[in-house]
Length: 406
Image (cartoon, rainbow, N blue to C red; front, side, top):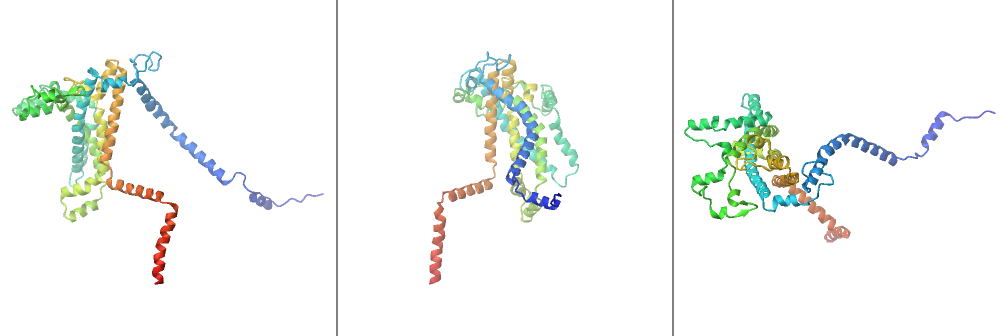
């Protein structure tokens, strides 16, 4: 008895017509899971490196800042005690040498930031504008010359500045050539504001006003807060401005080359001169770059360390002391690691706060206004009751219908 087998095409048609037990939704979830797994595998090395070299040290430093660890043994050993916020209190509230040193370092760094960030930003923008001039010849030479200090070792440049500004250095020799006596730059602790006020006859630096000398603010007198950068710190400021301007010049130069030439030409056709065109057309296009340069400048200036370490080590009379160098000094020289870690976290909070403020100042006000209007419209739409739309439609239909009947 022979068995009649169905044709192969009919069998395949029956197989394909059967419902898929897996289903399209399940297959879609499977593909999505595979893509997520592949994505996590790609970013896993980066997450591992960031976790080991960034997150773990930050957590350890945070623990050290609330402990009495002396730098010997493990900070997680049972002999290390938890002191809470005592290390922070020594910096901010308790009277003593620690708070006085920390406030002195903050004062010095504030003057350092106030001078370095604007100067390096303005000089970088000026040099970039010069290099962006179409008529300038040998742009490559000037670009390399201006950028060269930025790629040179800061330690090497600091040593050169030590020779230039020494008592018998080139700077004082040049000043003597024109009849001026230069100061002993790295041994002069006088504040520039004190020197300028004394020169203008506003006060006597040797006998400060009692109202300022007797008023104490956070461990320092008002006279000390208003000293300004010392002569020694002014040399470091000049060095840093000279070495960092080249890097920011390249950022501004790249941004200037992206400014539409048609817009500048339209402004010239409308009668704007060179300054008006730069202020009203070019500068608004540079707002993101200015924000970047100022942000990097603030972060870098609050972390200044190597120049102070090589040139002055905080002297003379602690007038070049900065929080970063003071934190190093407390940790590696005084073995007070808890206080040093607390300084680092206070410095971190200062940088975050200042960065947030400057981001708010440089925000795009038109875009912010547009986002605010969109949010208000969404709130009004969500607060409207469901029947309001129907009533509004009915209210608009009634007079229309009545008008038509007339």
